Amino acid sequence: MATLHRERIVSLRQDRDRLSALASLHQAEWGKISPFKTVAQHEEKLRFRISGPPPSETYVLLIKDELAGSVSLLQHDDIAGVRPDLSPWLASLLVVPKHRGRGYGRQLVAHCVEHAWQLGFSTLYLYTHTHPEFYIGLGWRVIEHRGVRGGNVTIMEHRYEPGKPKR
Image (cartoon, rainbow, N blue to C red; front, side, top):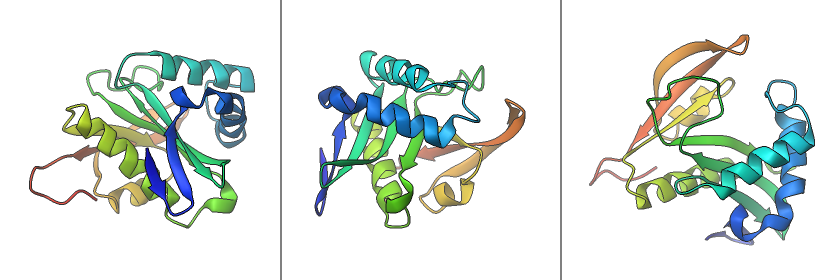
């Protein structure tokens, strides 16, 4: 568990009571572009993510015990058929609007990357349809652009290099 001043990042596996609230946040953020169209479908997605073997995990950011964001580490992301040869994936980075711009997204990404490295993965992948420059600033590299679900996504990777500082 990582601690940020008065904030903390915890595993959703250990804090399952927050699953429904997190599903509501996911629906509000991605309901129009996600294949998961209802809060119940987002709940099922999150249950699946925290019930699988490592590396599958979802972390939640709590600020004064209020749910403020999340990120997932997945064996394979839920983007239909895109790069099944790549694994694992950082997915579903979310910081609620009132907490954006304060570095919490960076903290969630760093937490997820660190966990992947602790599990022995030297490369982590993600896709984004809106913010590749955010991830580039964190040391991620664009490896592909692809059309998916009627839009375009950028597929990125982050490699751990021993002796090089982690971002």
